[in-house]
Amino acid sequence: HSLRNIDELCASIVRSHRETNQYRVEELQALRWKLFSREELQAYQSKSVDEMWQHCAIRLTDAVQYVVEFAKHIPGFRMLSQNDQIALLKTGSMEVVLVRMSRFFNTENNTVFFDGKFAGAEIFKSLACGDLITAVFDFAHDMCGLKLTEQQIALFSALVLINADRPCLEDRGRVQRVQRSVELGLTHILHRDNQDNLMHKLYQRMAVLRSLCSLHMEKLRWFSQRYPLTAHSLFPPLYKELFASE
Ligand SMILES: CCS(=O)(=O)c1ccc(CC(=O)Nc2ccc(-c3ccc(CC(C)C)c(C#N)c3)c(C(F)(F)F)c2)cc1
Figure (tube, rainbow, N blue to C red):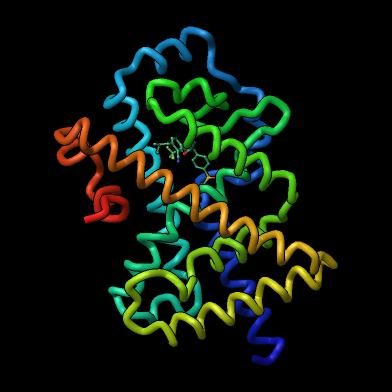
């Protein structure tokens, strides 16, 4: 890997990250005090469990679609087999959505951008999975504390996705080679930003991401048993394909 290749790799991952986010950080910053009114909050909280789950599944699928686009532009991802691309997205796309959530989290009032405004955790009450929401908010708060730049978020997101330790990969060696080039890219920009110490913190966060996503899958299994009709016929197909543990 000559330095030029690493620079090109970083540049294409950062460009892809920029192009696959519906909002720029500046836009989200400008909206940070746009909060839901009490009436709007009431409306969300009076939704039934399955209505709110369906609403969030649709939002989540929107966010995941952008992550799929992001993955396709990571150099080396498209050279992987279709099955390996799906396997990496199955386990990594939710993790990247959660990493991105730190871009639209306001630590001053613990609100997250959702449905066009900033909302506190209470808005998700009718989901009946307070522990998952608390963990998601705590993670977003913690990620904000790292004060990552857009470039660092882009490279970290790519590393979260290209993980050779994921289950059921056909050609683990090939994924390892792509993963190693992305790791080189991340260490390169952290070194350039004089923040080498961030690397081990980011690896620690990857373990937290895995626990968050298994909690999400556990809640989804609980929900699908209680509301099989909603889960099987009203959730977006991509959500089922990626998260239903079929
Ligand atoms: C990401 C690109 S961007 O342009 O920065 C952008 C693009 C869009 C948005 C708005 C947005 O989507 N925010 C949002 C906030 C919370 C949540 C959420 C809600 C419920 C749950 C639990 C449920 C799945 C059981 C979880 C979890 N885990 C997460 C979601 C979404 F439902 F989608 F997961 C979306 C914000 C920035």
